[in-house]
Length: 108
Image 1 (spheres, one colour):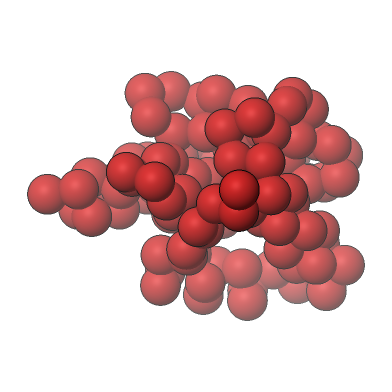
Image 2: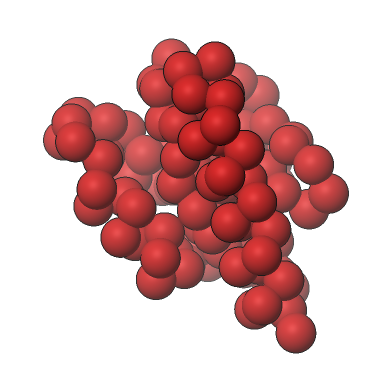
């Protein structure tokens, strides 16, 4: 089964803003893994953050960037893109909060 993964429009912009092309490509590859495996995607490629929010961990966690997503019905929504927590704790927290708000807006 191939899972549907969509980007929130603001997350698309955040992906485009990542300054290093190789890091943008790594996120796209992580999204492709999510499309292929869905909820069976194992750690270290994804992990739970809080509530319904999970993070995609490009390059098995070796990337300084994360894609924050949630599941809505049979689809996954990439709701925000942000830095890894140890690289930029405040940026990470902002991205997680943005993902929560965006997912909530979609669901309501």
